[in-house]
Length: 404
Image (cartoon, rainbow, N blue to C red; front, side, top):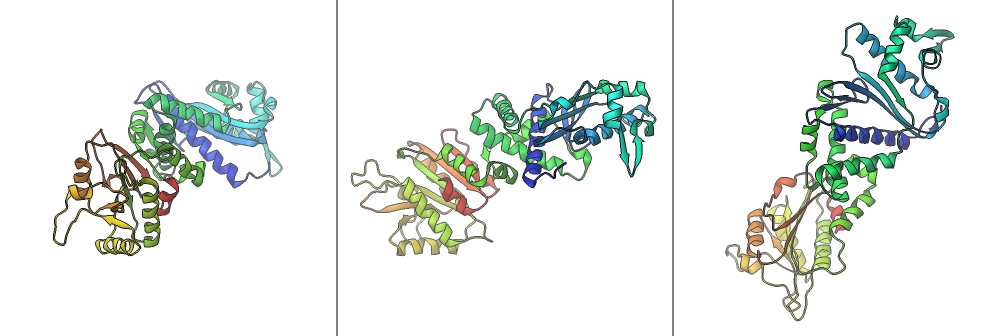
């Protein structure tokens, strides 16, 4: 068999994870559960039975018995332990997709099982695996009754669409929400379960799974981004939230989080200019003029002052609600209209309390919060249902520029 590429291997992992998510979503009871990487790739446990599933994805490979022979023998080993009273009884399922060769797998009876899956040669010695396990024909008949082999499994993309459709049905949501909120989070949870060192902690009930994936935040999950592609990921978010033929005169609040370790003033300043350029309109008439608000989470006070000073030196006019030295924050001051005449291009908010006060001060207008975070989405939780609040996790500050 030809060695599979790293890309094919990674795609195989995604295929298995997608099947795990699909199996969880299809469970009939919220107390039924799925285990990852225990008896097999996926173990499904319901009130009435358990099924161990071996998942294989070979979209560029012709089917041969050798591709599933090890899986069959491993399942028979488990079955032998069941017969000996050492393990509980389960059903076995091999689920795989192959490029071709499907006609090679005939109806499996005991003799076919022995010949094509249980008999092999190693170091010039013939082995009959069933005999080494002391299993007779009757035992093998019982094993076959518990075994299902499907080598006609759907391809990668159709299975992924099945997952999204299930999520859309479960959460009554749009396709974007299904993929970027729920599937994105589900993929992260399944991966975490798969790599947990304690096998007893690789299980999750349907109820817990649905609770944990229920988020309205666009998360930056490395596996999800790798599957989508970074640029395609950012482009899809932009298309969902920031594609406007005409930008309406709303009160927009942009919240960005910085990492002190990787912080660059020039990168942040570029972002300030981009937010202002795209979401400001300084009209001479003034009636339809507007500019956005900006809150920077994690920035040090002295750096924020230096940033504002640098912008002023470059004739980029900003306000922050403080009218004179020693004055208190004044929401009326910061909410005054930006126009062609006063040249206000962006409004800085220095704290979360100022942010909340300002949002409440413009309650008569349409308000939108776009919160970009590096993994701490809880730094602002504005609960007013009349305010649109979008949370988006990014890997780095420069990603925001590509999204907006």
